Image (tube, rainbow, N blue to C red; front, side, top):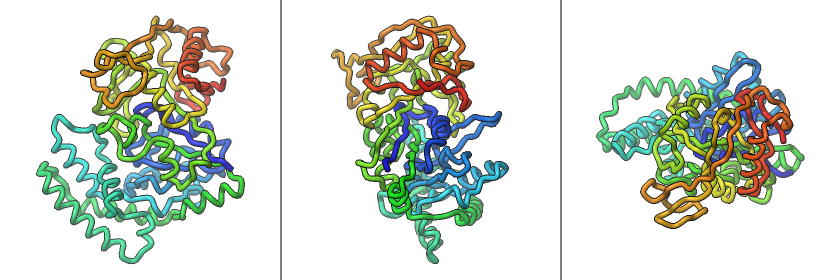
Length: 423
């Protein structure tokens, strides 16, 4: 049985959580493959709004297994808060939520290191969410990390103490005047670890292998977006994991040949949180309108998102790198009311017009080349069928499909799971 994959094609915040929730009814297992609680997957249904950070977005569906894969980094404190927030929904976490023993743990000192490192950069800061993600992945690649499976060992607290002491020395090195009470942070951490230990730990690569043999349907869920990939994103303003399709293989232990459908999610415009280049960013009333109507604030940090026109150069690059087979366009409703829309179809790169995504897209090197299209006035949020969509929206979609050479199968017209049109 093949594994389908769902990931973001921009700088994150594309709406992956909503679409995983919509698609979950078609799958037996939802498996998160990378990232940490710097992710914020927002789901809305039945009058409730939920923000998940680590737990897969299929958790609200009875009978669906939700698996946190080995490529994920877990903060037990934040994980416990997520469990607490979901407690009133009577979810059987012991049965429906599984944790890979090979997933790494975020320690309190990882978060402190993140803050110290970011503070030391001054104006050159990355725009970290300060959740300890980068330092945790550094320990992972440096072969110093503590994994979920270590919690089953008698000496795990000795390993913790050794690593935390090392981190404190590193924090002192940054000389960033970070104020903290480690004993208080550790008390909260150890309480959360005890809650985490009540869940089911598994060898997830073996579990998924057997599930495939048994014909189970699996959807791999990514976090962040392709342009934040540590290898293929806008480095160094990226996250610390592989957010592209390849990350699903390393983050779950799934062979490349087992991946079938690759669902790529993008907004009808473009947003970015934090620092880094953004060729189509708008600083005018159009950009302000996108942010206001689209409620563009980070689900994890609350930071306002930078907004701009759709960047087809970047989107084409993400489709190519991920091998996307189906596209899903989010937030088409936010563009209602714009008389004219612009789409970036090429870059003027150092005096040359190019259509590929270059090594450096800083403003001094790149100027977007736009194609202008007619907008639409219609309120899309009440629409339920593709036949109801205005001609200008269909023209917009047809144009994108032709440029990207991939079909747009789903159009989202609002945050609720019901506001989803299948084409």
